[in-house]
Image 1 (cartoon, rainbow, N blue to C red):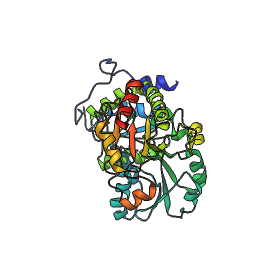
Image 2: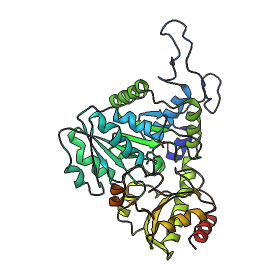
Image 3: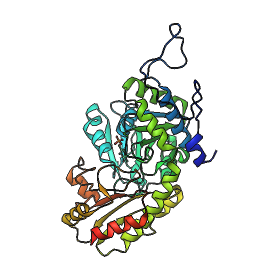
Length: 379
Ligand SMILES: *Cc1c(COP(=O)(O)O)cnc(C)c1O
């Protein structure tokens, strides 16, 4: 089955009890048993719920894995993965990272005895320099948030393949439409399903997909015993979103490219971060491992002034100033004070998340309207 068909039919079945074409929302905490331990596969909704199962199967199908897991948020999914580790274990993570992941690593898990190093994985040799016998997990994010760096997933996986180190990829920015890390050798793929998978800015959810039976058991245990499950209403919304993922992503990619090309020629724009441009330092890797370049575009101002960025945000009419990304509507975000405010200023500055940096989540409106909005606001 090819990808577009999989988003709609992959590992899905009509509801076995009624034939309902779309999986119903099984709004129940518990399930009747005819004799102790005798039931139809469901006992209690923390362990499994039919609406969540339908979503988890769909997730596995579109990420080319064997098992999917639906968590209550993207960060709950990340948390569920980190709980596979124990005190003393070491994690090597990408340096340009979603702010909430960085916050969890340094302000929660560091207190539990996990050790983290953050390296620029666009140079994979940086990973080798940090590997010790205690290294258990490599945490990749690509494209990165907000600077759109691209990490060569296959190269990273090949580097650590025979070392007993797991590779997990935060695939939120690409979505399974553009990139499938399990096919490139990763052990775990994770999503904030809040973003492109849901696609309509109406639900917070997280996803994990694996392709190994024993790893699947461990993740299920982490979800079930840790408790960070996704509820049936929200599972339904993500399942519904996935069915149009391919159509939405095509348009996000088209509009993302048009916005990037417009910004490239605008006299007020300083640096532009979009992997679809030939000038992007990781463009070749992006071309190799992604089916398209997505709808996320970041830039800063030639003036370097925070005030210019703020004036730009205030004048936007179609783009909405808001956190989050990946919905049908276009959003603009100021990483330094919004999504990445939890990263200490010294680290932020070192990484290039300057006060005049703007991150756009380009939606699926008419591109002409989006370009006109950017133009009037920049003027
Ligand atoms: C939003 C986001 C997360 C966190 O997901 P939530 O659903 O908000 O918990 C993790 N990684 C990336 C890249 C994100 O954009």
